[in-house]
Image 1 (cartoon, helix red, strand yellow):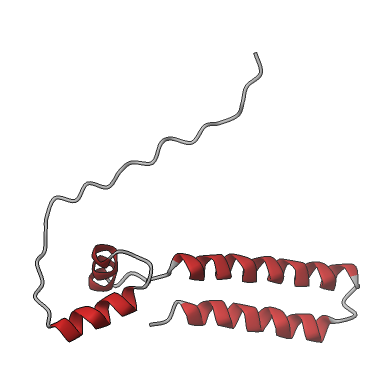
Image 2 (cartoon, rainbow, N blue to C red):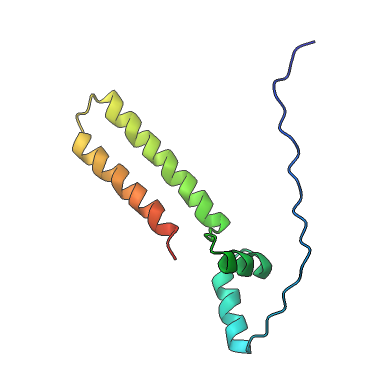
Length: 105
């Protein structure tokens, strides 16, 4: 029988044991909902309170695409023997700065 390779353990489900009630005005609630975007209010408030970065799923898709483009630029640099080194270096740096800027509040 062939070995299928290592298997990943099943992810453990987080167990929340406490509830936090927060009172907001209608305007504050609307602002929080607008800022939270596609993530749940609970997840948004939890991440903000604990100082974790908030990255929407659309942003993660963009980050993944930007990383892919950076890899392609690196490939162009390698395959061209550095013929476009200034342009590829500038583009890769711009991609890196954009990704880092996405994680800033």
